[in-house]
Image (cartoon, rainbow, N blue to C red; front, side):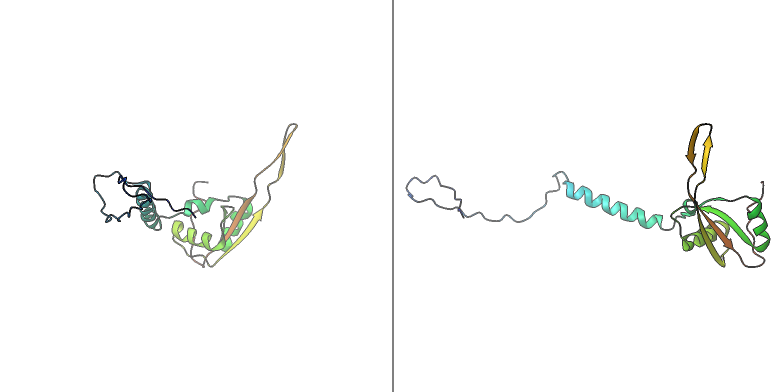
Length: 151
């Protein structure tokens, strides 16, 4: 291990003399430009505060895509069951919370079915529809959701 030393201007000393460096007290100057670390620290604080503010914001519009309006879904409405197409990554708990936020009713149960997209053909070109997820929401007797108005 090599020891690095600084030679002093004294030519009288034959051997190299090490100069002790005294630690300067850490005094932050207010006139200095902020460092990258300071900038990132303030951005992180802003993001955390924004995340706290977003917690109160409803994300139900990302969970519930649209109500499914078919003959079978309309018949299920007589049994207090309503059918929605939901996000492919949504689970039962998220769907129940979204229904409560959007329609103001607390569901008894939520059943979820993953549907595979069908093979389709347009002339000579064949393709496939997207996979999607259906949620069948059961409500208490007397509670309704106004899904089919204007349909």
